[in-house]
Amino acid sequence: MDLEPTAAACYAEVRGRARRKQGVSPMNGKRWIALAAGVIVLAVAAALLATLRPKGTTRAPAVAGTFYPGSKDKLTQIIRQHLDEAKPEQLERVRGLVSPHAGTIYSGPIAAYGFKTLEGQRYKTVIVMGPPHHYPVRGASILNVAGYETPLGTVPLSPLAKTLRKNETFTEVPAAHEEEHSIEVQLPFLQTVLGEFELVPILVGDADSEKIAEVLLEHLDDETLIVASSDLSHYLPYEQAKALDAFTVRTIAEVDADLVELCEACGKTPIAVLLRIAREKGWHPHVLDCRNSGDTAGPKTQVVGYCSVAFTKEAEPFVPPVRSREPLDEAAQQKLLELARAALEAAVKDEAAPDPDVDELPEAIRRYGGAFVTLTRNGRLRGCIGHILPYAPLYRTVIECARSAALHDRRFLPVVEKELDAIHVEVSVLTVPERLKASSPEALLEKIVPGKDGVYLVVGPRSSTYLPQVWAQLPDKDAFMSALSEKAGLRANAWQSAAARVFIYHAHVFEEERGEPTE
Image (cartoon, rainbow, N blue to C red; front, side, top):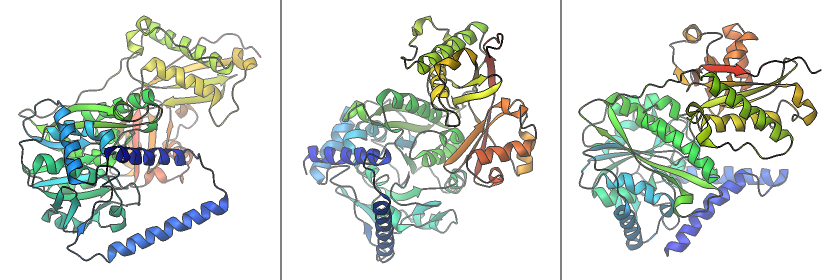
């Protein structure tokens, strides 16, 4: 197969998924029912076929010819080309990698930076963890086969795979592995730079990263390499993707497993597992490359983000940076309020958002930061939108949130021009969220400080937050957390479940001067 059709097929799949996600091809109810029924039938059939696979067989490549060339010669050529072009820093002994898994023409140049650091090194066992994209997995699944095939040959499974399957943390969901690419696309690079090694292929779905890390730590030695397979943001405009991905990479570089699970990355749970192991082992992160498909082989209208990060064990244990944000001085506060007011008025009047001269802004608001903008009218909430995580410079976050609070808060109709004089603006600048861990719901409540802590609740795909200001309306801790659960569309006691993750943050709150009421 020629390289051009390979790239076209791969990107067509990416584009197709994005279009389907955005609802470009609407279907009526009957067609959706028929489609859903077909998917269920195919899934059941795949599961049955997988269970009938004779033990000891190998897994055939699922994406050869689409995500990467299907012939040995062409695959060898493109992998070698990417490796020759990569210029990473020299590293002594790599213990872990975060590596992307898109089509080779898109993410291959970035992946090569990580794999290039492995040249000349030898590992007996390589653990590759990736997310499932086509079939749901509860927990972590290891396929019971003799090996994984690629056009470059067969990679045998490690005996460790069988050992891990005996642990209750792991299972086998054969259907999830049938068409999955997140593990497979890493193998040609590994085969090229390492030659012989044994594989432990783990699909990490809806799983507890702490439990997986705990089990893997029992089996690691100096001859084991861990690869966390993940792309970053998906299908966003180029500049927006760069901002999101920069934050994710900073979080990886800070070895913050809790925070990375809030980031934009399809393999954030595999990454979290690696980060927990790295933190326990004192491994040092090395960010080697961070780009997206708009930088390699795709358009910049909708891009997918990629990064390559290596972890090494050095003489001195890794000490994570201390996060802190000093309260903004009066000049910085005033500038943010001015920008929020200008963005509010521009949004309501259907004008372009403010575009200030960055060089003239206070340095403190050019730093990345999370923030909320709250609009009130006669003391009543009129809109409140924010970003908890520091995805963009603080001044940009405030401009965007002010605009969204005016037009896109689903609880309210958009603000109209005749209201502007009556609208009051408040800005909350947030610290980076920190995971709050406790042995019981009661112990968790003991750690929360009313009036000071903003709370961010995450349960599976659902999440919600209350700023510290909400304690004025909900001073009881249990009622506060119950209301927060319901805000996320969950049962009132969802915050007490084992699956719940609770983060706290603080807010530096300031507002416009209040004049005489206008109505």
